[in-house]
Length: 297
Length: 291
Image (cartoon, rainbow over all chains, first blue to last red; front, side, top):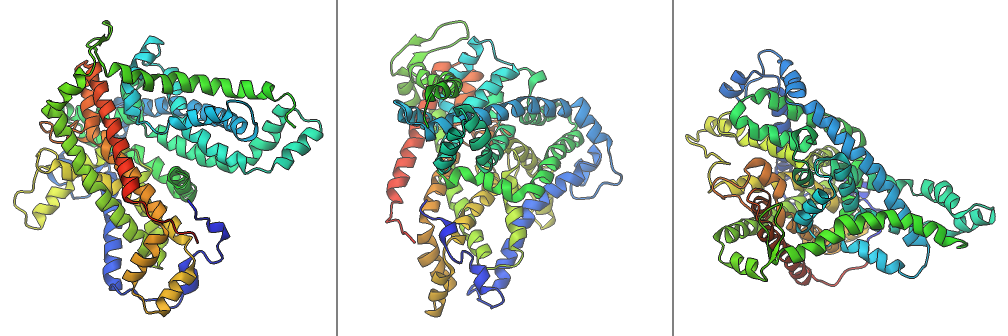
């Protein structure tokens, strides 16, 4: 991208035109209706899901629109306990948190070295990592399954953690290399003159300065892994180790035999509500974190 | 400054290189070989058969059916997603009311997992419990379609979900690009009597063209996959009506144990993605505007 908003004097149209009726040539009314319609299209299905999750199965079947006659909290208990949503949540955390720590640590170390130390092979390693972004994960899927199987790590948390980490490296290294390149080298020199060794420079000086970059890459990877479905589907076939996305898909496919719709509605709500809360608090950081992949691409 | 640098470089690089080569590069390389083999079982080794998998693919009606379904998404997803996202981004940067609220709301589906979205929309489309059909009946449609159970409607239904999910993401991307256009450009155009329509086509679009290009490639890549939505909502059904290459190769490999053929489809999918990216980049190339 050639656009750099920081260098531009008045970035926002609305700032200069506020108060003046700039006037749409399309009727304003129509635009507002379209916007409101799309907002309703986003909000209503979720709202419907939420209030339906408190209904009985009978109500769900015979009056899809109506509000619940009484709040069926029991749906949530069945979803959390009997349908194992609680276990799936735990499994997701067990996989995603260590993966995230590994990715942030490893990609920061790798990116730092590639960004700031000239040595033979530096470029080859950098482009080697970049190559990983070119291929769709489907291409690796079948050999990956057999590799993980041969390593005895199918159906194991460490197996999935290592795979998540490995597949997150290319973009994270790419992003953080760019980031470390922008840090001033005077700081590095000053610290060395003050008697710090290379490790101290990294951990005490460079890593703290890289925090904004680590935050973006952290949000990007957290959501990517939390919502990942393909890799656990192939590598975790034991229902006890299902992560949240697998558990949810499994519940949906089970409905054709079991017919406990109310518990399923409750399960989806339990997954949606924390996401909604976290998003409403950190929405601007999250928007930045997610779109970072495309803006730098 | 670089004293003893290898003491840092080596331990900092080795762990990530090891992970990356083992779990990423090696499987990609191995896929090329496996696509040239017949490999039926977990215990039996792969047998080299040359290009046989690929010639089988040419005569495989299921493969062409899946490719056709991908083609449907390759046309509909960019058209509706990018179209709507550009429209919303433009309106919201031009000082529409409640712009902040709309921006936050429209983006939300992007944060939810595709599986949760798939389950939610399976409910919405459901012929008895879903609100969509009971709404359609309410407004007078006597026999609304079974969206996910009818091969004539299933692709449109899934495509709708994908668009619903993606519009907010691309809108935020376009807003970021549009906000960096200097306001003076718009002011000058308005003094010259340009309409909003003119401004959109002659100022906004050319100045954010780079972002539009990136966005098109992103959405195309999604259109060539569509795995999670399809696998969650229909598993490729009814009667392969929504099967795409990614779900087809998944079923061939992990349900039917045709690992060689499944990998060959993955290779075809890779070249399809590559081809589309190259064609798009060529078609969309314009002189980039610096400002």
